[in-house]
Image (tube, each protein chain N blue to C red):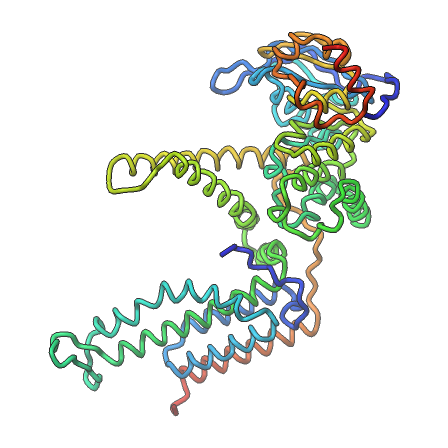
Length: 261
Length: 266
């Protein structure tokens, strides 16, 4: 998967036209509030909100699905571990296998894993509206307006730009190993080879960083990245943020104070 | 090959006096360089690997500060106080375009220099579009640099400097790793640039087509300064400096007069 999150930044939608600063701030608060919910019904509500926001972007759902694959790889094992390891409490429903009675499957653990998964999916789905609806550099520069230090903003921007170069470098080096009949196995030679591989990559990265810095200096760079993009907050942006904040309040109320369901 | 117009030598634009530089690891890269380059000249800077070519050009742009000696560019001494002015005067195109293209879109990369020079907003856009148009990349201005082909990235790197409208342009191996078609495009562009030019290359046809004068560096010193005609007539000198074109010449030179000249001289 290529890490080009802003592939669909040229589309037109209410999320695309939202001021990047307000958008990132509002959706980040929404993400935090999703992470704090403790009821599965609220988590499902959050998932619906995330899906609604995502559908408003008009970005193909398959694009976000790729990101969900990564979440599933990470959170998927919870569905095995949690039902087996969660401490049993009075009133819990326990399932047994008839011949393997020492294995207890706690239904509450399964429910908890489900809630973690739904929350993770809801948050990951928000990443695309947050960073995929503007050019990546504009989104990241918006972070600077939200008081993230300039040096961190620059580091994110350059990391994003050079991921592609390092991936190409990695590919070239690994091909160079393959054409010389390198076959990894469990021995000292393999460890040594991988050590050299990583060392060389590190040295090349350092050299590349030096070259880039010199190229920047030669074009008048003095330590701050300047941009001509004008961030403007319109009335419509405020309305969009207000709607999301209303949803956040709804989530908190439903999760903490609502007695039904 | 384009007919070279007679050199109209004007005032000195780069003056280097007794320049010495040693790297932190103790390698003496430059040992007493004295050089004057006139406005409008196109200079080929040649020499073996490690002879000090790249170190010298980095001094002209103020990336390295001299250990001893002095450099003036268009009357301005290359000192920390003048760095911004010097960098607006001297544009530098690095060998690897991936080092030169660090922004998210081609437009931003080309605008990076003018923005740093505090050029007015409207003018920045105009300069960017002109530079990209000259390089034949206008249609690609919203694309990220990593999506471009190597040849396009090489031209894009040149556009990033052209948009700064420098008086002096320095190119480090502008045609390295290019296919003959892209190389011909690059040569055409280089020979049409109305600036003072310093070219580092091991590609003799491009040096021949763009430069009038050759400076040979050897072990951190200037070995010889001679005209291009004298240089290409001396095959020993060519080979000593890693330049030999007898085979490549057939591929990339289309001017029969040029061919005849080269063969007569070798």
